[in-house]
Image 1: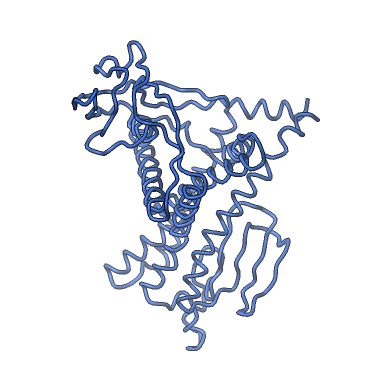
Image 2: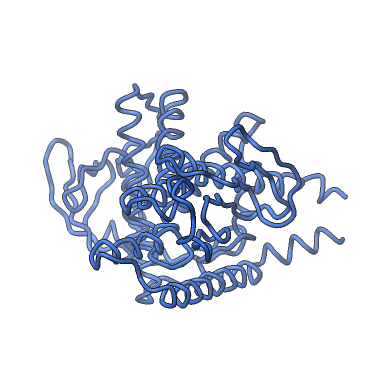
Length: 383
């Protein structure tokens, strides 16, 4: 019973994260579709049996469904939730064609599809900017307070008190920026410019690659310099600098994620680092318990939501049929060829895309199931 009392927050936190981000994503599709004059038949959060719903003045059914994984917007002329065209699409009266998604110009269809991932990125940027203005952006000066013996930093000649000015030509303003660069780069050589008591020194550093195991048994290969910095400060931003910093953070997370995916493909990063729904559930609950009080917990969960929003927007842009990126790839083909792919090619592509998505979900879930925290969770649940 104590286990349930201590860990009740996990499922509510997961549902909040998924519901908010799915709503943001689908609302992006919905809003741009309405701006383009498309009639929307349904806006759903979740799948399966409807738990609650109502019609708006435009005839759109807004509903919440029983299975809280994903959601969809069904446009007029769609045969199903995947936005495939209905069989009678060509037999519509002219008045109906004016509000049908599939009869809109290519540019408008592209904008409607792209709007979902874009909404996730915009949400993350605006949310971060608000946090930076209200609470400040936490950062640590990029100064080597301590250099670990036999570390990459010591081998390269970094000394206590050195301030890192830039890495591979990119300016470093905080220890967090330096750490992120090193973590995702693994053992890529880093050309550093260092301020040593007013004297500028150029050093080439190759981080050591280590395997780090967190409290939940997740194993990650990361790059490590071997320096520690002391001191922490919160820098409050005005609207312009907050927005600029939020864009920079979003860009970094996006490029770092793509870099990590590339490393998995070539084999330099273990695919066991992939997490599925169970992993997101665990991380949502952990985030909601991380603070010292209710406000801290809420801010921690909000920060995690920002990260997941960026990931959701990025994943949906991958050129895989069934995802928004797959639709955009078909539209690119249509723009080049002057006509869309054949119905047979589209059907075959969607089947392949569905298979790929399902296999990836199964693989990521299998990764989650094999992590120690899953065993500990169910042991605590029934003990």
